[in-house]
Length: 476
Ligand SMILES: [Zn+2]
Image 1: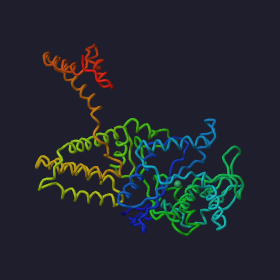
Image 2: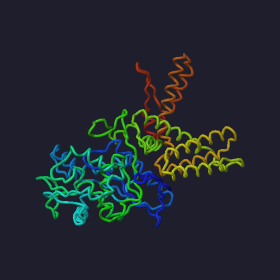
Image 3: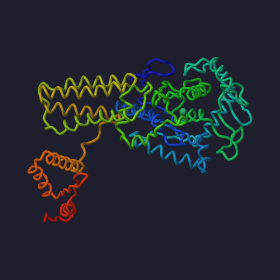
Image 4: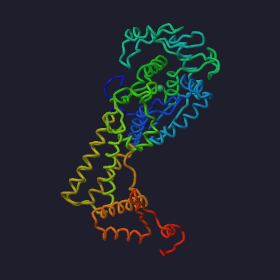
């Protein structure tokens, strides 16, 4: 598999020597439920992980939980709770909301507060090596001490300096310097350190957790494009300043979600919560909406867009359920199987070249198109069943197209509605004998119709309800 790294800008071979991929995806700051834009990296990189697993790789998938940060402290003050209570509540919600999107739990979900000793050690090493300095209990990373700074985000240090000059803050030697450790104000969560009581900076948290769990260099470090600068630039600088080695071999960043062409964000107030969108549209339409587009590019969110994805998902299911209901016969002599083999290879070629899920899903659509054409030309239920089985198998790592046909219980109600509608049409066309026949036959099955000013409603008669219970009383 090859993936384009943000750092080199070129395709890099994944090729883990021991068959294990060590992967870190920046996780949520737990001060609120996450929005549909935050959900994009969670979902896309979850699919990447599952795809790699389906190809026989072992994936150590780490997604941290930032449970100490300014926003959590602010939220706690607003709600009259402790920061720990706020963090615990939204951590639970994060797990629930990920499950609602069909995201597999990470192999590791480290909480920042469980790694404070490692963060202090990391900060101390940077101070010892002359890459950091202490001012009144705060510790800052000295950007000037690390000449490679700006490489990941492709920014020029001098330009950055010019932009940052206005935002100079007290104590820093240089406006670009960032906090590794922050002295705590009264009432804030704090831990003892060589520089006094305080708490780690966000950029330091991730580096400590990556290195503790995955070692000096991870295979993949990923997140949304908004994390490239400054978060990942700062992570990269700290790690390299300590070990002299890259923090990750491959850096991946997904494009941001926009809404009406504008960036979506909590601070902008134009966001939609992921759990609310999942409740409204269901899980698969959201997954299809994301995975059928180029995940590196910005994507404009709209409910219409997700509804369109829902219709595409439904069309695939119509094919699958119909094909799976066909007679279980061997494929005919001029079967579709060679074509299916070819399309399967194409599917993997798409996913193995920069995880092109949009191309992969296009190939699943092509399999269905070929199956439809083959049916009109040859019939051959065996080939259609094979095509359906292939679509299911290939889509499994993407978390798509695994549902069985809805059970007969759900269908029965829809069929009754259909007959009631049909009877109304017959009556409006004055075909009364036929309409009465439908009503009488339904009555024999224990389904009573009542005509009212707002149309016809149906209910199960008492006898019919009894027969669905444990006592087998026949119709009266
Ligand atoms: Zn991070």
